[in-house]
Amino acid sequence: MNNRMDRTKLQIGTYYLREFARTEAHIRDAAACGIDFFICTSTDTDMLDLFHRYGLGAVACGVVPRWFGGDGSKAGGYDAQFPREMFTNGAASFTDHPAIWGMDLVDEPSSLDFPGIADRFVLTQKLFPNQFPYVNLYPNYASVAENTDAQKVNQLGTPSYAEYIDRYCAEVPADYISYDYYCYAAGIPRAYENLRIVSEACRRTGRQMWIILQVNSRNPEKWISADNLRFQAFTSMAFGAEVISWACYTSGWWHNQVLDNQGEKTQQYDKLKTVNAELHLIGTEYMKYRNTSAHMIGFDGTEWLSVYNGISADALDTGVFHGVREASGKPLIIGQMSARNGDGSTALMIADASDPYGTDSTPRDICFRAEGKFVRALGGNGYIPLQQDEDGVYHVSLVPSAGVLITAR
Image (cartoon, rainbow, N blue to C red):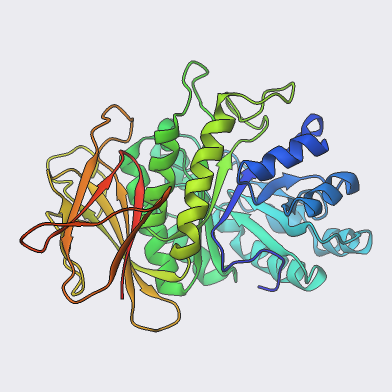
């Protein structure tokens, strides 16, 4: 797609910048927090000018009509509710701005609406050549964790989530799949199955994987920790995520946002700033590689793969890396990657998945062999020293819930 978002970089987004947080100080703070773009924003010119000054992008809401699937009761109604004239009229009154990266088109649609969405997607591309149309899909729990199976089918419009994603790929001409999953509300096992389905579809169809994660809390008494943020982000990257967004920066839904309703920073600001800096640091090298597969290592006997349609192994052997595992057998998710430039170099994006709730502070010991290769390990704070024992096995010490990118040339 022809748009202003630099898709060669790991991009970090977030939802909502309410009017009380559109001052220069607030926008400067958002940029310092490692935010690259805001979703569902206004087109206020003063705000957009500040976005442009600080290098932020906006996925604008209200220029074209925005659909929200919700509980599925409206499924199949998109085409009739939003005729093409609403889009052409929006374009006629639109004033472009360099900070507007995308048009917020659809959130959590039923597959029954994919034909109409596909038509408006193409129309939006033609009417707004500098912006991408943004479509975000349901997670595999279909928006609300308490839904019955019948309600989930009603929301998705298909008998299964895999079919929902397949229909999206077949019908909507986007070069990405975006979806939201809030694992501290909906559970860890489903998150892994959702990641598997979407990542496999992205690899199969050549799309980028975009994901929305939670920095806020469904329970007002709970605050998402920095390790919880790391766990969500690095496991997503192990499956190949290239755009990561956080819900929510200012009020949108639930509790404990990054800013409170007076525009003051909560404890989430410094946590998110720290983790976003780690993601950006690793992201520069990470984006030089393309995810080719994802592997669950050391999960046997755990509760985490109860709904995962895949297997766990004791260690990973890629032909370059051998015997990759955590020395004491703790669970890892490992993304196998190959260089985009075709020079033959390979990488592993390794996420510690042994403690999703952040109760164990013991360092992890990632061990592997890679004979005849120049090997480096990049963590969130820079390159990590590699130790090699007398048997030639490399060891990388990793803090809990973190990620490390190991490259071999």
